[in-house]
Picture 1 (tube, rainbow, N blue to C red):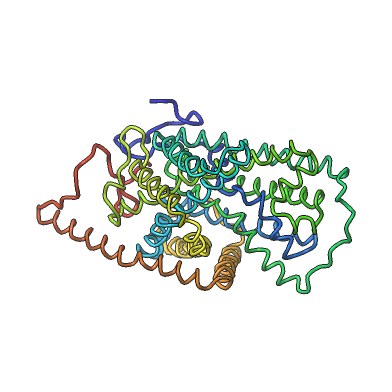
Picture 2: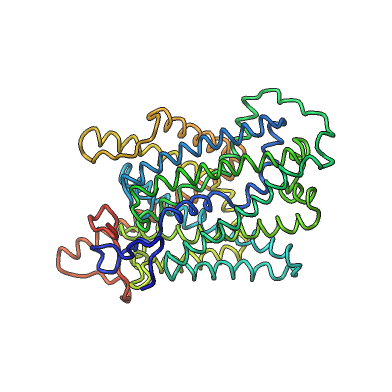
Length: 488
């Protein structure tokens, strides 16, 4: 067996070699948090914020305010992760606090369109930037996108260690690209001909409404920290390291985002930023010429590739937890006996994501469920009140990591999540309706699998077996509900 990450134990005791292995240390956890948040958004989205608030101060204020909300989210998920350091993250919290149906619908949405659609979309984005960087013909777009999905799925199939190492490398590379952008902007922006040549823009008529509108793209850009909780069972000492990774990772991203926006504003000005379709490329191109544009194009390609790896790495843990509860195909619950990964779930995810890529439906699907991420964030934050109530009643032990400012900070986070959901729904009600119907289609699927589970339980009690298909030498890992733990 290869040496574990961060010099820690590999397969935990009590798993008989069939559970998740703790291979992800604190540094890798921080890289997962940063890599899960920073994709291509910071290179592109700041122009939308500038369009809505107009002035440099309000632009930075919107990103700072969004960072505060993200930090509260990190505190919330840190406490939840310490309470239940199990694979599946929000799926586990929702199931234990509110029941199996909302948890299943979360996992169903991820598998059907949210995670797999994101994989398809990000893979195509990576391919587009690669084509721009290399000058290859458009015909290579699909093979590049599919090749990236297959390559990264293969890496993560063979263990969380190679997946985490890949994530570390590409997260560091995207941070280097952003460091060059920020360094050039702060050091050379004074020489830019665009700085100081325009009249300072007037503030919006209603600052409160403008900031509220700007928060929607800002909060979407900050989303992603929660994905590290999906691999909690594979973190070394998760009760301690998961909250620290979330906190340090989000603080790092907030710092990077603020510095990047300061660079855009110093280089392009507020009006130039609002008018730009690619602020990172425009800013670095203005400062360093064609070399700068080429460099940032490579940086975005690397960033999207790293984000793609992160989604491929963490999402199958949710499907595995769902299947381990008897609510999906039983073979999806099995972990590879050697690599300790949800190998079947990884393959299933890759096949479905490639299908979405080939049909081109991923864009529409993501538009339909754009509100779902923050709906889950808000619902997950609400589980904290359930756990705190159980703690007061002595039903669960008290944890050492506490969300500061409770209950006000979680309520503020829930309000922000609801604002994003309402704003996204109001901006396109038809898409929201379609997304709700797609998510609602999971209800009969849930009822079917629950009935199958009850039938299997009845068959076992009566001494008969329900045939689920050919057996394979991979071992199922039950979730916390069954009392069997994959990694302790």
